[in-house]
Image (cartoon, rainbow, N blue to C red):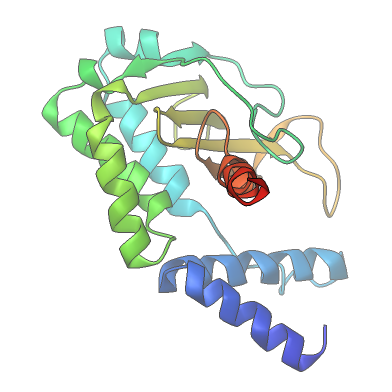
Length: 214
Protein backbone atom coordinates (compact mmCIF):
# COMPACT_ATOMS: atom_id res chain seq x y z
CA UNK A 1 0.00 0.00 0.00
CA UNK A 2 0.96 3.62 -0.36
CA UNK A 3 1.43 5.65 2.81
CA UNK A 4 -1.98 7.28 2.31
CA UNK A 5 -3.68 3.91 1.86
CA UNK A 6 -1.88 2.50 4.89
CA UNK A 7 -2.97 5.49 7.00
CA UNK A 8 -6.61 5.02 5.95
CA UNK A 9 -6.44 1.30 6.71
CA UNK A 10 -5.20 1.95 10.24
CA UNK A 11 -7.83 4.64 10.74
CA UNK A 12 -10.46 2.04 9.83
CA UNK A 13 -9.02 -0.36 12.41
CA UNK A 14 -8.95 2.42 15.00
CA UNK A 15 -12.68 3.00 14.53
CA UNK A 16 -13.42 -0.69 15.19
CA UNK A 17 -10.96 -1.57 17.94
CA UNK A 18 -10.04 -0.50 21.44
CA UNK A 19 -6.50 0.71 22.15
CA UNK A 20 -5.70 -2.80 23.43
CA UNK A 21 -7.21 -4.41 20.33
CA UNK A 22 -5.29 -2.11 17.97
CA UNK A 23 -1.98 -2.81 19.71
CA UNK A 24 -2.64 -6.54 19.60
CA UNK A 25 -3.41 -6.33 15.88
CA UNK A 26 -0.22 -4.36 15.22
CA UNK A 27 1.82 -6.85 17.26
CA UNK A 28 0.43 -9.74 15.22
CA UNK A 29 1.31 -7.87 12.00
CA UNK A 30 4.83 -7.30 13.34
CA UNK A 31 5.17 -10.96 14.22
CA UNK A 32 4.09 -12.01 10.73
CA UNK A 33 6.55 -9.51 9.24
CA UNK A 34 9.33 -11.03 11.28
CA UNK A 35 8.35 -14.51 10.19
CA UNK A 36 8.42 -13.38 6.58
CA UNK A 37 12.05 -12.30 6.97
CA UNK A 38 13.10 -15.67 8.37
CA UNK A 39 15.12 -17.35 9.65
CA UNK A 40 18.48 -15.84 10.38
CA UNK A 41 17.36 -12.96 12.60
CA UNK A 42 15.89 -14.53 15.70
CA UNK A 43 16.43 -11.37 17.77
CA UNK A 44 13.64 -9.77 15.78
CA UNK A 45 11.47 -12.85 16.22
CA UNK A 46 10.51 -11.73 19.73
CA UNK A 47 6.99 -10.30 19.64
CA UNK A 48 4.68 -12.34 21.89
CA UNK A 49 0.89 -12.17 21.56
CA UNK A 50 -2.23 -13.83 22.96
CA UNK A 51 -0.63 -14.66 26.30
CA UNK A 52 -3.55 -13.35 28.35
CA UNK A 53 -5.98 -15.45 26.34
CA UNK A 54 -3.72 -18.44 26.94
CA UNK A 55 -3.30 -17.93 30.70
CA UNK A 56 -6.92 -16.99 31.48
CA UNK A 57 -8.23 -20.09 29.73
CA UNK A 58 -5.81 -22.27 31.68
CA UNK A 59 -6.75 -20.54 34.93
CA UNK A 60 -10.41 -21.37 34.37
CA UNK A 61 -9.93 -25.07 33.57
CA UNK A 62 -7.67 -25.45 36.63
CA UNK A 63 -10.34 -23.79 38.81
CA UNK A 64 -12.85 -26.53 37.97
CA UNK A 65 -13.17 -29.52 40.29
CA UNK A 66 -12.66 -33.06 39.00
CA UNK A 67 -16.32 -33.63 38.18
CA UNK A 68 -16.59 -30.31 36.36
CA UNK A 69 -13.37 -30.97 34.43
CA UNK A 70 -14.71 -34.35 33.30
CA UNK A 71 -17.62 -32.51 31.71
CA UNK A 72 -15.58 -29.66 30.27
CA UNK A 73 -12.72 -31.73 28.81
CA UNK A 74 -13.78 -33.21 25.48
CA UNK A 75 -10.40 -34.92 24.90
CA UNK A 76 -7.26 -35.12 27.04
CA UNK A 77 -4.95 -35.61 24.07
CA UNK A 78 -4.26 -32.86 21.55
CA UNK A 79 -2.24 -33.93 18.53
CA UNK A 80 -3.45 -31.55 15.83
CA UNK A 81 -5.29 -28.32 15.06
CA UNK A 82 -8.77 -28.13 16.57
CA UNK A 83 -10.28 -24.76 15.61
CA UNK A 84 -13.59 -25.36 13.84
CA UNK A 85 -14.64 -21.87 12.77
CA UNK A 86 -11.60 -20.38 11.07
CA UNK A 87 -11.45 -18.98 7.54
CA UNK A 88 -13.58 -20.72 4.87
CA UNK A 89 -16.07 -21.90 7.51
CA UNK A 90 -18.53 -19.06 7.00
CA UNK A 91 -21.77 -19.21 8.99
CA UNK A 92 -20.79 -22.49 10.60
CA UNK A 93 -23.31 -23.93 13.07
CA UNK A 94 -21.80 -25.87 15.98
CA UNK A 95 -23.34 -28.00 18.69
CA UNK A 96 -22.59 -27.00 22.26
CA UNK A 97 -19.86 -28.94 24.05
CA UNK A 98 -18.32 -28.91 27.49
CA UNK A 99 -19.74 -27.54 30.73
CA UNK A 100 -22.49 -24.89 30.88
CA UNK A 101 -21.95 -21.81 33.04
CA UNK A 102 -25.05 -22.77 35.02
CA UNK A 103 -22.95 -25.54 36.62
CA UNK A 104 -20.17 -23.20 37.76
CA UNK A 105 -19.93 -21.54 41.16
CA UNK A 106 -19.71 -17.77 41.56
CA UNK A 107 -15.89 -17.60 41.46
CA UNK A 108 -15.72 -19.85 38.39
CA UNK A 109 -18.38 -17.79 36.64
CA UNK A 110 -16.30 -14.69 37.28
CA UNK A 111 -13.26 -16.34 35.67
CA UNK A 112 -15.35 -17.26 32.63
CA UNK A 113 -16.67 -13.71 32.36
CA UNK A 114 -13.13 -12.32 32.61
CA UNK A 115 -12.01 -14.72 29.87
CA UNK A 116 -14.79 -13.52 27.55
CA UNK A 117 -14.00 -9.89 28.39
CA UNK A 118 -10.38 -10.47 27.31
CA UNK A 119 -11.63 -11.09 23.76
CA UNK A 120 -14.56 -8.67 23.66
CA UNK A 121 -12.32 -5.93 25.09
CA UNK A 122 -10.50 -5.77 21.77
CA UNK A 123 -13.52 -3.90 20.38
CA UNK A 124 -14.14 -0.20 20.93
CA UNK A 125 -15.45 0.41 24.43
CA UNK A 126 -19.02 1.23 23.42
CA UNK A 127 -19.36 -1.85 21.23
CA UNK A 128 -17.70 -4.02 23.87
CA UNK A 129 -20.16 -2.84 26.51
CA UNK A 130 -23.13 -3.77 24.33
CA UNK A 131 -21.60 -7.14 23.46
CA UNK A 132 -20.90 -7.98 27.09
CA UNK A 133 -24.49 -7.12 28.01
CA UNK A 134 -25.61 -9.66 25.39
CA UNK A 135 -23.18 -12.22 26.81
CA UNK A 136 -24.49 -11.61 30.33
CA UNK A 137 -28.10 -12.04 29.16
CA UNK A 138 -27.31 -15.57 27.89
CA UNK A 139 -24.59 -16.36 30.41
CA UNK A 140 -26.04 -19.53 31.96
CA UNK A 141 -26.26 -21.04 28.45
CA UNK A 142 -22.58 -20.30 27.80
CA UNK A 143 -20.51 -23.48 27.43
CA UNK A 144 -16.79 -23.98 28.06
CA UNK A 145 -15.06 -26.91 26.32
CA UNK A 146 -11.41 -28.04 26.49
CA UNK A 147 -9.06 -30.30 24.53
CA UNK A 148 -5.56 -31.16 25.75
CA UNK A 149 -3.63 -30.92 28.98
CA UNK A 150 -3.97 -28.38 31.77
CA UNK A 151 -0.44 -27.62 32.94
CA UNK A 152 1.83 -24.62 32.38
CA UNK A 153 3.58 -26.59 29.61
CA UNK A 154 0.50 -28.14 27.96
CA UNK A 155 -0.82 -27.38 24.51
CA UNK A 156 -4.57 -27.06 24.40
CA UNK A 157 -7.72 -25.83 22.68
CA UNK A 158 -10.74 -24.27 24.32
CA UNK A 159 -14.10 -23.00 23.11
CA UNK A 160 -16.55 -20.57 24.72
CA UNK A 161 -19.92 -20.84 23.04
CA UNK A 162 -23.31 -19.27 23.73
CA UNK A 163 -26.25 -18.09 21.59
CA UNK A 164 -24.48 -14.74 21.10
CA UNK A 165 -20.72 -15.42 21.05
CA UNK A 166 -18.29 -18.07 19.83
CA UNK A 167 -14.66 -17.91 20.95
CA UNK A 168 -11.96 -20.43 20.03
CA UNK A 169 -8.35 -20.63 21.21
CA UNK A 170 -6.02 -23.18 19.63
CA UNK A 171 -2.35 -24.11 19.97
CA UNK A 172 -1.59 -25.25 16.43
CA UNK A 173 1.16 -26.94 14.46
CA UNK A 174 3.96 -24.51 13.64
CA UNK A 175 4.28 -23.49 9.99
CA UNK A 176 7.25 -21.07 10.19
CA UNK A 177 10.19 -20.77 10.41
CA UNK A 178 9.87 -24.57 10.23
CA UNK A 179 6.92 -26.94 10.27
CA UNK A 180 6.07 -29.25 13.15
CA UNK A 181 3.82 -32.30 13.26
CA UNK A 182 2.71 -31.52 16.83
CA UNK A 183 0.90 -28.43 18.15
CA UNK A 184 3.10 -25.86 19.87
CA UNK A 185 2.64 -22.88 22.15
CA UNK A 186 4.59 -20.88 19.57
CA UNK A 187 1.64 -20.93 17.14
CA UNK A 188 -1.72 -19.72 18.45
CA UNK A 189 -4.95 -19.11 16.52
CA UNK A 190 -8.00 -17.44 18.01
CA UNK A 191 -11.47 -16.80 16.61
CA UNK A 192 -14.28 -14.56 17.85
CA UNK A 193 -17.58 -14.81 15.98
CA UNK A 194 -21.29 -14.42 16.36
CA UNK A 195 -22.47 -18.05 16.18
CA UNK A 196 -25.06 -19.65 13.94
CA UNK A 197 -24.87 -17.41 10.93
CA UNK A 198 -24.77 -13.73 9.98
CA UNK A 199 -21.02 -13.64 9.40
CA UNK A 200 -20.05 -10.36 7.72
CA UNK A 201 -23.59 -9.04 8.34
CA UNK A 202 -24.85 -11.46 5.69
CA UNK A 203 -28.42 -11.65 7.03
CA UNK A 204 -28.56 -7.89 7.54
CA UNK A 205 -27.44 -7.28 3.96
CA UNK A 206 -29.96 -9.80 2.63
CA UNK A 207 -32.76 -8.02 4.49
CA UNK A 208 -31.54 -4.66 3.17
CA UNK A 209 -31.64 -5.86 -0.43
CA UNK A 210 -35.10 -7.38 0.04
CA UNK A 211 -36.47 -4.09 1.33
CA UNK A 212 -35.02 -2.13 -1.59
CA UNK A 213 -36.16 -4.71 -4.12
CA UNK A 214 -39.76 -4.01 -3.09
